[in-house]
Image 1 (cartoon, rainbow, N blue to C red):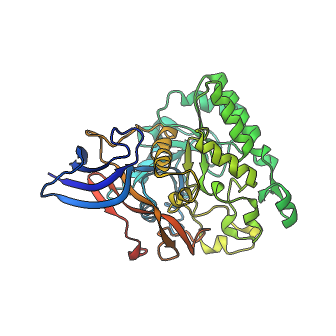
Image 2: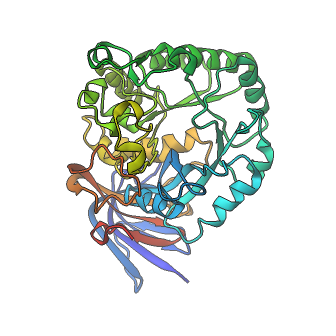
Image 3: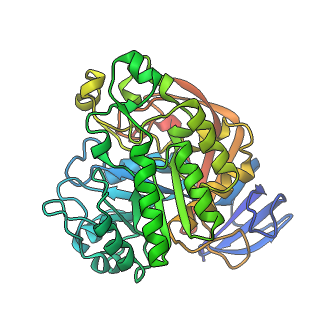
Length: 425
């Protein structure tokens, strides 16, 4: 019988009866068997005194090139980077050749995830790459898909959206929609505004997000169904979601982590690592996103992890590929924001993400599965090429001292310590 004691951990979990207390947690065969002020026994003991423990964190969207572009990121490197970032589960869009649009593709991803320190929750594509038609969503769900997206090809056709949302009523896995109409910014490279004008770059206006967002929410209201929006980036969008929720609509939304940290002024250096979609918007938008996250209008934070190689990033800004590597530093960004306490971080990364993905809620209580993240919010670490476990070279925070440290996770009854000193495998 496998038994582990997590010793002297401070519980950060609003749903736990032990919230705010420093406790010992006895785990037997992957299940919480006992929670007391002190537990003794001849078991494996992990002393985490001075650290917080919360239900395991879940990332609601990341990309992985495996299969097809494994040199950018394979499933193993994604799992290692996610684990170092404190995640025990990642909803990931895996594959470029082929894209994940069949049940067999979903099953292939799951077959590669055994023995990893993180559960990979594969996302399927709801559109076929060649025809744009709807894929077999039920087949992918039955094979283990945790949700459905149309990565790099957001849909703005109202007829297709209505059919998709109507169909999704019968699914347990959510359909994640990106509110972005490319036709309103066909050549855009960054947020439309004074900074873009001064840099001579074509802009991406906020209406390219707010107009399709309103359309999606209106269609969902008409069909009387919930709707899940990811990649929300503007103040206008926050207000649209806030109004819909005030009217009782079941609208869930997620914001990319770097849109909470950076704004369009950060592109003045033409750093290709800041070229992302959705783009960093104005400082006003950034503050609106932070406030929306704090007041519950925004439900979840997503890494929006999209690793790229040197060939695609070390070029002129105009021609650089979209995306940033980010999954390992989500918690660090939140730790640096005033008002984001350990409890708030746990609420967002553990509970908000699960609600967004329609996953079963968990808590730190006897009888629950032992799925934990152990972390400190005040300690700092240096993030560099050696400690960045992703294959992606496109990380905006490399070379920085970052606030917040993940000590390890518990998953499937096993303690998985984070060891950045070992570097990349």
